[in-house]
Image (cartoon, rainbow, N blue to C red; front, side, top):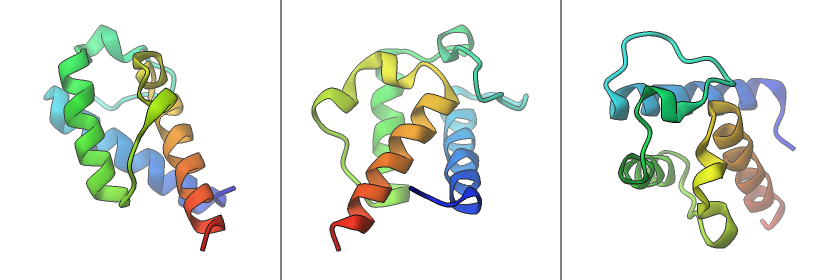
Length: 90
């Protein structure tokens, strides 16, 4: 699993991408339901592209379910798991 500093970095990047995509000025909390601030299936697709570029990874299969993008924490956890798996494969 990623260390605390790396997880903080992942979470910060997720928040930054979300704030940009959703046009938000206010900070995001880890457990805020993102649908309440405008996250939709279209913005999830944009977020996926941004996160894939930022972290050099590809989301696939069950990871693409909308509910996996309900909160910052869920998104950051998914990214961290993928990064850990990718680093473990090398």
